[in-house]
Amino acid sequence: MKPFRKYQSLFAPMMCTLAMICGCDQQEVQLTDVTDRPAVSPVIHDSDSIGGSEREFSLRELLKESIQQANVVVPNPDDLNRFSGLIEETIRSTDPLSLRDRWRESGWLLHEDPDSNIVVIAEHPDARHGRGIYAFRLRSDSQLILQAPHRFYDRRTGTIVRKMFLENDVHAAAWNTVHREQVDVAHESRHYLAAFTEAMMRVDDELAVIQLHGFANKSRSANARNAKVIVSNSTRFPGRLARDVAISLKEEFGVEQVLLFPLEVSELGGTTNAQASIVRGTGNPNFLHLEINSELRQQIEESASIRGAFFGALEGRSEFETANR
Image 1 (cartoon, rainbow, N blue to C red):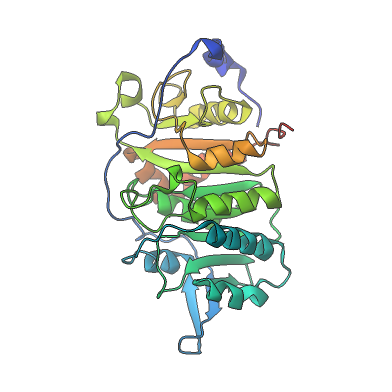
Image 2 (image 1 turned 45 degrees about the vertical axis):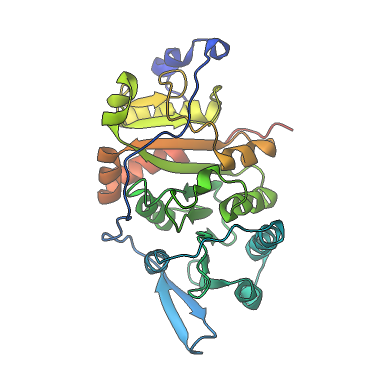
């Protein structure tokens, strides 16, 4: 994806002169995610020791099942290291089902759809601790990881990530399973989402991690009040990926409706994001924090064509930035 020259002047001001402070501020509070318009979802198999018979799931059903009362437990370093190691082993394995017993011993279930090479790691129903749910394609050539860390708070983001994951060759995806008021996984370094991100960086440290968030226009400043999307790399110095994606989204949704943090807007830049810190810590510059307003989130969720246009702006690059090592 090449930058459109007519927009390049938008990003010309020297970034070092900007001293704008941003965080993930109060957004629209929602307690449930929308899952009533399913994308085509593969059947995912798991031979669960409880009952002994094969059970069939779709990714949509697994995400719905994860919305249960959870006894949130702060993980210890050993638990996180074990989880991260198992994620890496599973992705690299030619026979991921061979690791099923080890996952179950840690309170997880491994679900697999052999036809689509999709593997889902979800908490065992008897061990729900708000640890998240994770999906990935084995032997995928994609460089994209999608994350919805606030799917109950930022309504529709979980469903959008699910549909984009199933409709496109996305390498991996992750969702929270408890409300951010219990655990804000986007700002918690001691969480399984952080361990998952670390494992994916070990598998391929040039992957791009893209998080979807949501905001309400009415509670924002003048600039953000009319915005549909705020694009950030979670720093005050947007790199090539953030600039190119902002340009592509402007082409699709309007110059004034897509804003690049901090050059065009001073809020909702996600500068304290835990996963962004992990990705940058490997020398990888390819992290994106996307804030989407409620109107566009609804359109993306409901319209396959709009969803395709939005995803195309994320995925339509010929290559991502080279890691800085």
